[in-house]
Amino acid sequence: MKTLALFSPIHLYRVFHFSHFGVLWGQDALNSNPAGIDSDHTFQGTIKSDPAEVRVVQDHLESLLGLVAVGGRDSFCVKLGMEEALVNAVKHGNQMDHSKTVTVFMRINPIQFEAKITDQGPGFNLEDIPDPTDIENLERPCGRGLMLIRHYMHEVTHNETGNSVHMVRRFNQPEE
Image (cartoon, rainbow, N blue to C red):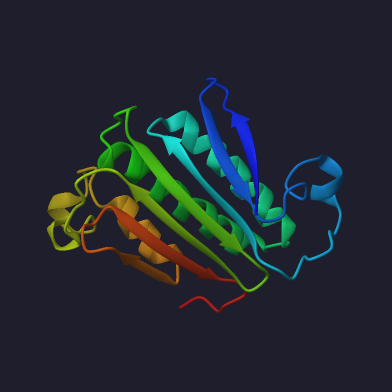
């Protein structure tokens, strides 16, 4: 695994690890069919609890999705699930505290997408989150992100503490 140092638009320094360094960077690599396309492509890094940092991860996710030619529906599901998980970690987990970080791991291959998002917050109990589809909660902004993640991912698990989510989306599966 190789290491790449990046600077975000807001000039925060962080280190990302790529299993296929060079494949993710450069327009030619993204538009071609690189060798090893059937292997896993991984992204691993730590970001500050800042919405701008979420966008940087989303940009890398778009690159990863392009590497394995994911279909439109699967691509939408992965992007929405990841955005919700990242925003939840930054906003609810770390309370937008810039001194705290979010650890991101993504793996993609032609069969599936897998991600693990971990924040430094105290966690939560899934049972305590109100159902956003209940009539009394329709106008409350709580639980919608978790509902979307569960809907668009095939597997969603949280650690005991409630500060880490593991998600899997299998590609080309019939929708239920």
